[in-house]
Picture 1 (tube, helix red, strand yellow):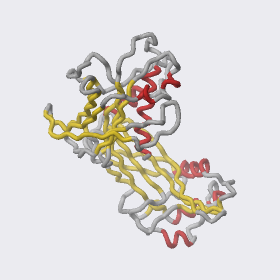
Picture 2 (cartoon, rainbow, N blue to C red; picture 1 turned 180 degrees about the vertical axis):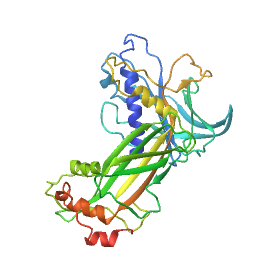
Picture 3 (cartoon, helix red, strand yellow; picture 1 turned 30 degrees about the vertical axis):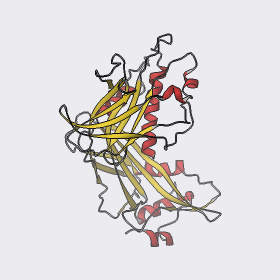
Picture 4 (cartoon, rainbow, N blue to C red; picture 1 turned 60 degrees about the vertical axis):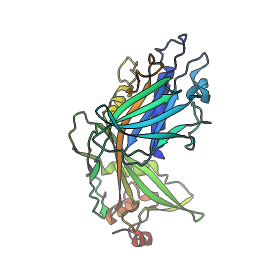
Length: 362
């Protein structure tokens, strides 16, 4: 669900740029302009496509965006994904509309949130073409991308039963292979723990302790990459994000599961994306200069076969791959969290606690 929310969030940011860009003449005649957003993810079985339209009017954009009719087409919309080799379509999958994924309140209308859902078979080595047919061919918007595949975390080793982050003067290294067609990579590390409340409830918690985005312009097949963060910053993140003065908490425990294949103390997540997403991120990132005008990136185009083929389309059609690995921490780390100079007041229990004796997977 988090990944789906991120995809929808990217679309709304793009739509805001299109709808509110000061380069548009507010007195210009309205033109039917579709906005299409899709990021294929081979690591997932279900794929999503968002189809909206640009809007123009005399009211403030924030007010118009709160009305569903401003964002969604009221005519027939068909979404299809084609697997191609050269100009030949080898196989196609139809997507179906769904309103079952809720959207948070905000500027954009939340009473309706139509997303097209499909379960295509994604295979590296082919070109994938997204085809959005609006109003029986009046507008046909298309985009192409290749599949990101083969991402693998190498460090920490998936065979290792635990990891240690006890020596704060060292760095912790995360190593992985980017996989095919990957130019953009985001690495996240999450710390998972339990809070035992005064009323007897036990609550699962998770905080992000590391986040980094790297851009790789020239990458070969399965390029090996290493990233690292200071162990001292790990402990600083715990102190910054966990409330030591929360009187509703009796004690805290670093999360573990006796099954090594289940969620553990630390979750390492690596997401890689293709050149389309890389370019989109480069073009739309905030300007560091005096001039703040930013171009609008789109790799969605109007098919010449459209009945109305003189218009423009906006959006992004890209590919990504996400892989995660969860590891328990060892006794040294448990002791450092419970008794360390900076974290000793966070109510974490030492490694001798019965919870660790019965739950640790090593």
